[in-house]
Length: 225
Ligand code: SF4
Image (cartoon, rainbow, N blue to C red; front, side, top):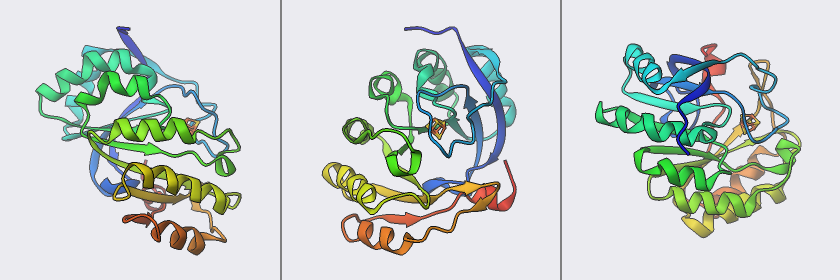
């Protein structure tokens, strides 16, 4: 479905603080709203947004003058119908498109995957989020993402169980064990949580996958947006 406008919280320039592009200067487009409710979410309860038309968004992105555009949220794939119109314009202008997604909306991904360069997808661990499991949904999403550069991220907290880590590892292993798996300790009030079983989580994951990394949210440690 074509969407003429999208609810966007902010368009800003900053440093990517997570995942395999850590430290890269990017323009962030933060979309409003999400289909999930994770317990550790720092976007929940934010209700300010502005409606952007496609043209207005392209203009705002050009103004920021960065080569990489990070679509983030909330959940950007809720706006696939809008992105379908905007991304071809951005690609024509030579932008690199980086999608940050919760990894649950495969059909929406398929509408725009051709315009993406890098996909950062979550595997939501129910013991971390306090919500339900999405193992099959994440598996299907990851399979659809392997057409592009993709890596997986899971937020871990002191409630995270080894059993959930093993299930996430299985999802990745069955698709491609070379896909990067990033364990990201939750951050509360800009402080990285100290996770009791972190070494165990790392060693179990690394014994089955080729590329496991422990990475906190560096932008929060540096005190940048
Ligand atoms: S998927 Fe991301 S934006 Fe959505 S509730 Fe979870 S942490 Fe928040």
